[in-house]
Length: 277
Image (cartoon, rainbow, N blue to C red):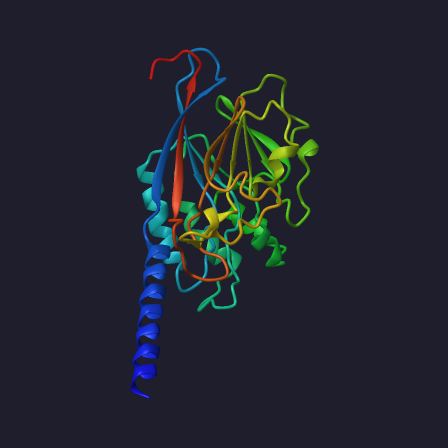
């Protein structure tokens, strides 16, 4: 009887240590990933520093508003010219120890500082909240919500495409007012919109995949929760003349755990063609 007990106790201890380790990874400060991209900015334009953050998933225990407030400070320390927030601001996971209203979850975003603006789109979790005041909460926090529309941001035209998983995406409508030849930055919550984008979409920023969130040794990630599978799973992807960035996000979904997919933020510097770097 003693050996089975010892074996069970050892397995329990290993499991507890593994869960604690994965929880600590979920709580880690995000890795700041940096990239430089040649972009069709106007001749003589200054480089533009774009910060991409996604999947904040405000909920207890891992992402209370107080943690988001501190992460906003980390983002500001990078001195971005433009901030893009690619959806899923909240999480209503069943194991959540605390849930926050849209206003409480997004209030820390008021502290973001970027001279060319802070832009956002809704994610599937935001729509699943079924709160008609969600967009208003984001706007109250200083986030310009682009629901299938575009906006000027200095030398850039920013195009926000709504969430495809909840069937709110409308690519044609989003590009309707984009001037021909504009230096266009496109962002959406999920990379599932990418195959339907026009060729003029040279820079695309998304989240949603969490880079797998739990990426197991040997077997890899169980799912990326996309229709495109691993094609746009994570990181910087080049397709012809197009640069695609998929963030691992800041928070967690379903379980407050991460493994092999640390939280991250992208800082992408756009350089005019021909500029020495």
